[in-house]
Length: 349
Image 1: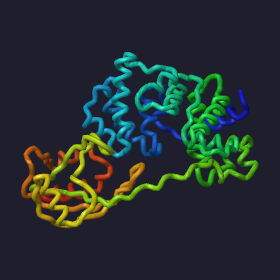
Image 2: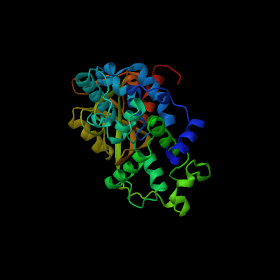
Image 3: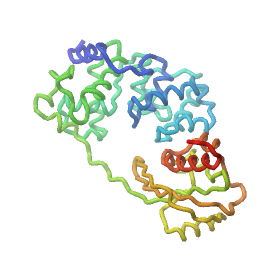
Image 4: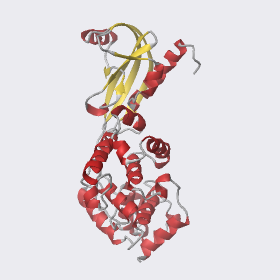
C-alpha cells in the first residue's frame, strides 16, 4: 500500500469525529447523509439526519412521501431542490431497481440528484468500490499535496485531481479512505490556517515544501450576489394569518407569506387591492436578511390587518403555521407571526 494512503488511514483510525452515517454501510443512509452534507456543516446535519430517517426510514417510504411532509422534514437545510430530487431518485430506485441501490458509481450517477462525488461516496463507502469521491475537501487536499496551480472550479482540474485520487485508493477499505480524505480536509487541511503540524501526510505535500499552502487551492472569482430589497407581509385575520404555497421557482413546494420587491406603503396596498385583498397597514415589525446561492434578500417584515381576501385564500392559526414546511427565508417572519398569534391566544412564549 502506498505510504500516503497508509499514513492517512492510520491517522483516521487513531481517532476521528463520530457521526451516525459513519456507523453504517446502508447505501440509503449514506446517500441521505451525503445529500444533506452538501452546503451544510456536518455538526449541523446530525439532528436533521436523525429526524429525517425517523420519518423516512427506507427508500420506499421516501418514494411514497407526501410533498408537505418531505419539505417539513427538510425545513432549515435550504437548497430545497435536493429534497425534491431525493424523492424523485427514491422513486426511480424503487421502480427500476426494486428498491436496491445500484452498486457502481457509473449507475448511481444516472440517478436524479446524484453527481460524480455523491456516486463515488456511496459506491466506495457502502459497497467498497475502488472509486474516488472528490468533494471540496478532497480538491483542497489534493491541490496542496500536488501543488496544482489550476482553478479547482474548472472541470479539467476536477478530472485531473480525480485521477490522482484514484491512484491513492487502497485495494480494500475504500470507504474508510474516502472518509479519511474528507476528514483531513474538514479538520486539518482547512481553507484558512491549515494545521500542517498535525497533518499525517505533511511529508508528501508539495505545497508545504514550496511554502505555498496558503496560496492554494486556486479558485476562480465568485460571482457577486445580487441584493434585492423585499417586503414580507403578515396579513392577520383575527387569530389567523394569510399564507400561500409556492408552486414554481426558488421556493417551490414551500409555504410563504405574501412577499415581493420593496415599495412604498400606498403602492403595497394598491398591489394587494389588485389581487382582491384589502388591508389596513399596521407597522414594519422587523428586518431580516437571507442569503441564497445567487441572491440576497434584505426584507422588511410588515404587519397588516386584513379586511377582505379573495375566495379560497389560505388562512392558518398558530398551530397550523408551526407545522407547515416554510422557506428558511421566512423564519424571522414566522417567529414574529407566532409570537403575536400566541400572545393573542394568551400563551406565554
